[in-house]
Amino acid sequence: MGPALCLVSAACFGALAIFGKFAYDAGVSPSALLLVRFTLAAALLGAVLLLRPDLRRAAPGGRRSAGPADQAPTRRLPAHRVLATAIGLGAIGYAAQASLFFSALRLMDASLLSLILYTYPVLVTVAAVLLGRDRLTARRAAALVAASAGTLLVLAGAGGASFHPLGALLGFGSAAVYTVYILVADTIVHRLPPVVLSALVMTGAAGALAARATFTGGVDLTFRPAGWFWLACIAVVSTVAAMLTFFAGLQRTGPSTAAILSTFEPVVTTALAALTLGESLTPLQLAGAALVLSSAAVLQTASRPKPASGTAEHAARAPSRTQPADVPVQTGS
Image (cartoon, rainbow, N blue to C red; front, side):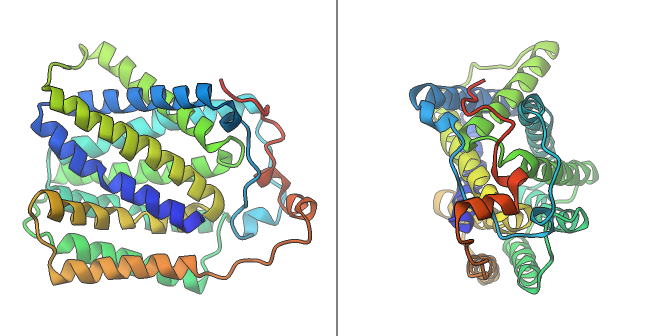
């Protein structure tokens, strides 16, 4: 299920640019889009946790295939550090990444910006290997090369992209922040239930953007009613659903695989643009999409370790990565 969840997340995130395009057409500003997006998402996730208390409990889920990080004990963070890290992921990581991305989008073409942003799977994989969290197996290396080449072909087929130095710098900054975001999220994704973690991240992002709006004179919410519809689509599909499936997938696959599978996102964006905005897919783009899908297939058919004879043995193999011992079972805060 891990690779499938990552692909669903990528598809939901891939629709973000399309929804954003329609929201901009309805008069929504970038600052209003970000603030409303994260505020609505935090409210929705909070409501879900109130209506479904069982989602506050950490469900016993499978860990990704054992790697170096799973073979040695890791230091357990106290509960308050885990919760603070989750909020910081939103307030510092997600808010900064989204702000950099949408700032760059005002200066350069979306296709070229997406190409710059999607250097992050390479950054995540290299960083995870250097940190000892993952092994660069031949299968994973082949999938990374295929996914990167496919993304390049998909975006190169768009043509007409304009280069802006500051926009490129902001785009690389967005990729770097997202790399850190994924690696930090991987340290706590097994300590909190996905819905709780997503709610904390969204609350942190909404709080940071609200504070920024307060110090910069607020945001303009006097856009057309259609704008609220597209913002709702962004909040529900491209934020809540995308985040929940991403964290659930990350929990099962690890940072490198999750990042590589996320390269399916620009393929979805390009396909949706062809369907909704009248853009056509070139043979080059179709070839790139096939490469990205092949990388997903390679990862999905990767050999998995044989299950242990019992759950106790599995838990003993990586206690700090599978047991939320330092976090209360009810973590609604």
